[in-house]
Amino acid sequence: MTHQPADQRVTPDDLLGNVEAILAGEPDLIANAANVAALLFEALPRINWAGFYFLRDDQLVLGPFQGRVACTRIPLGKGVCGAAASQRETIVVADVHAFPGHIACDAASASEIVVPLIAGDRLIGVLDIDSPIRDRFTPQDRKLVEEVAALLVRALPA
Image (tube, rainbow, N blue to C red; front, side, top):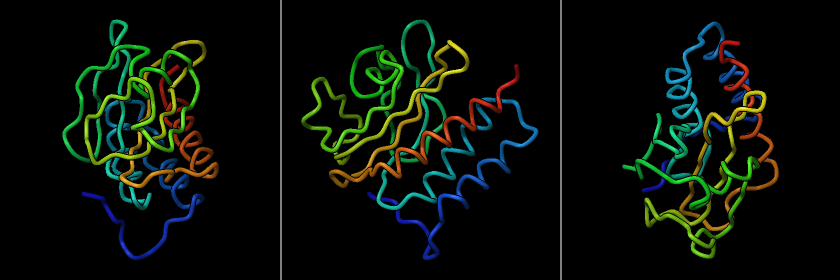
């Protein structure tokens, strides 16, 4: 099932402003991740999953998300999330079925963007967004999602 947001379009500036507003004064990573996942799920059209995986003992463990039930643990280097985490760089996949080692948590997903969450030199986890549409994520989407991830990381206590 693809989530379709309300009729009004949310601009990138609106989304970033909303993210900044919900993060303001709240240092808790889980609370912030839950609200950011909800905002992304509501704001981005044609997606079916938005959420987080956090690094725990050399694997990614499911965090707050919006969408269908997801894989609970992902080894570093495995699938798109594990690859983005181990490479510490954003990965945009136009067709997940062509990605070597793709982990199909939801068979409906066709494209994906994963942004690592890095504070200083420490990997915290990843922000993962899936779509049932092939080649869904544009360079503008990449920039926007990377900015959202950066805002979340900056909200962490020093």
